[in-house]
Length: 89
Image (cartoon, rainbow, N blue to C red):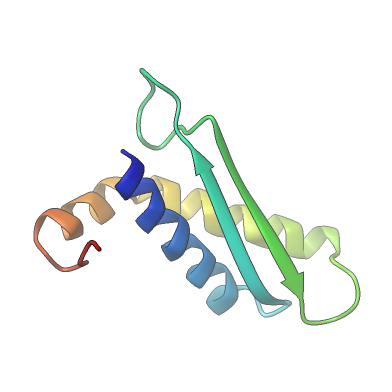
């Protein structure tokens, strides 16, 4: 699960920067929860640097929506890893 969450965190951070115009940089941390489905980690949090001075509630909601979308697609990500579409290091 650790490698999957590492890849997911990177994918999430890239998706946040790409999809949320008010964010310049993003770093995502995911902590697994034993016995729970992959799309329900114990913690999934993002540290973001906004393009402007402040991080408003609209931007925070956009970041959360991107993260939720990525979590909802975790099985697709897992299949990409299995199929060799995403290399592991």
